[in-house]
Image 1 (tube, helix red, strand yellow):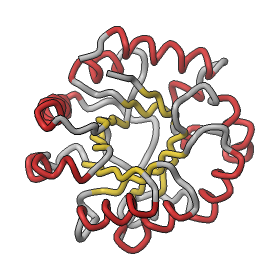
Image 2 (cartoon, rainbow, N blue to C red):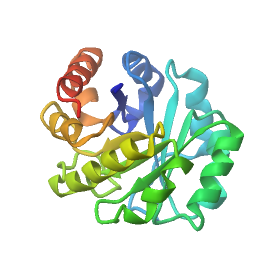
Image 3 (cartoon, rainbow, N blue to C red):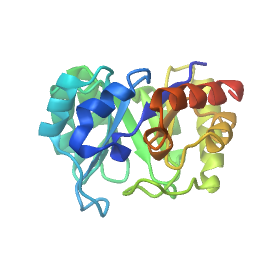
Image 4 (tube, rainbow, N blue to C red):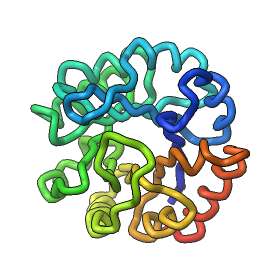
Length: 220
């Protein structure tokens, strides 16, 4: 099982995003958190910023939409070239239809779940998504602590993905560092979003390598 490390630019220097994207060029994707100050109590980027980041990023963009009405807005992020677009199950009117539209445009389609959202309604729909993102913190702010109560959900998804025989990536986002990445990997995650632990390091590329190695040593 391949392990992927996607640093979140929410922890980068917003005045030097092109520089900080270059500093994480050894990662698999750059994770871009889109917040609208409605679905979550914070405001970050929009589609225009993602289009510009797409032009200067040395690695593909993994866009995470923490917004209301993703059925309307998500396709625009795929249209400007984001490699992966993940929207929240709690906000989508028709998650399957939206995922299919994103795939038709050419992006990977991801479904995100808040810590308290049950996974069971989506287990029979895994083939409709390229990625499931389990939030291991409450969405909205970086720098939070990993919620261990999300581990059974990760384990349940890993079992379902294995039985489905579909190539669905299992991503975790929130509080990921060299300790918690071990726990998440053991539970079955294979794609990891890390913000503060990467951009807070003196050499982000070394931290990316350390996190990836830690996850691989405890693969499920």
